[in-house]
Amino acid sequence: MDFISIKSIKQLIKSEHISAYSIEKETGFSRDRLAKIRRGDIDLDNVSLKSLKQLQSYVNNHPETLD
Image (tube, rainbow, N blue to C red; front, side, top):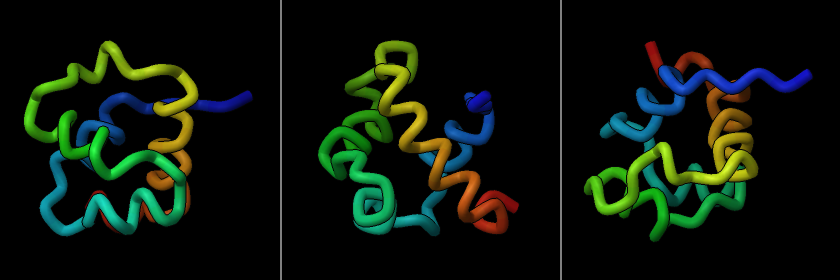
């Protein structure tokens, strides 16, 4: 079973040390969409489950980036 941590995903999105490019490269999650979420143009509540899984995969592969 997959586990999605909204708290961790929010930390990832707010992180200034993680580029949108690196997230897109590893997960396929669009840089443009991530930028819109970071700016507040798109609310995280309106992001699909598939997209949340993509972001969670980055969190799972790089837990040290959220410390």
